Length: 199
Image (cartoon, rainbow, N blue to C red; front, top):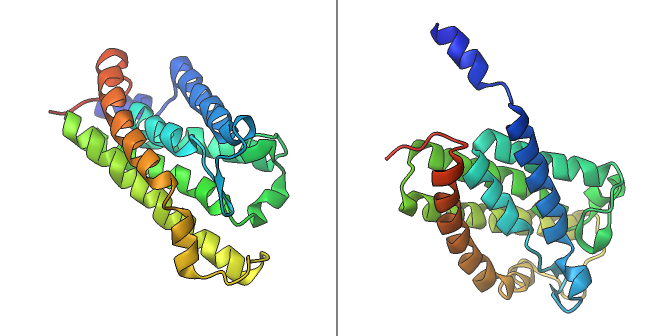
C-alpha cells in the first residue's frame, strides 16, 4: 500500500499542470514589466517581477512543481517564444549576460519550496522567500560577471564590484516583495493546500 501511495504522489494532477502553467505565464508577464516601464533598467540588469513570481511558485507549488514551472518558462524562451525581458527569446539568449538570473529562478523556486515542505509556519515562508532571493542574487550576479568576463562585451571599467552595484537598486524591492511573497503564499496555501503543511 505504501508503494502505491508514493507512486501516486509523484503523478501530476490536472490542477497541478494548470498551476504550473499559470506560474510560467506569470513569469512571462513579470519579465516584461521593463517593456511597459522602460526606465526600470539599471546597468545591464532589467528590474522585473520574475524573482517574485519564481519564489511564489516554489512557495505555493512546492519544490518540484515550482522548479518545473520555472524550467518550462526558460525552455519556452529558449525555443524562441518572446517571453524573456523586453520580449526577447531564442536559443541565443543563453549567451546573454543576464541569462544566469533565469537559471537561478529554477534553483530559487526549488529551495523555497523545499524549506516550506519541511516547515509550514508563517516564519518559514518568509525565511524561505528571503533565502531564495539571496540565491537569485548570488547565482545570477556571479554568472553575469562570468559572462561579461568570458564572452560578452563588458562595459568600460567593468568589475566584480560594478556587477554588484547594479544589483543595489532592485534589492530593496526584492526584499519587500520576498516578505510579501512569504505572507501571501502562506495564506494561499491554507486555502489551496497544494503541498502538505507541517506545523
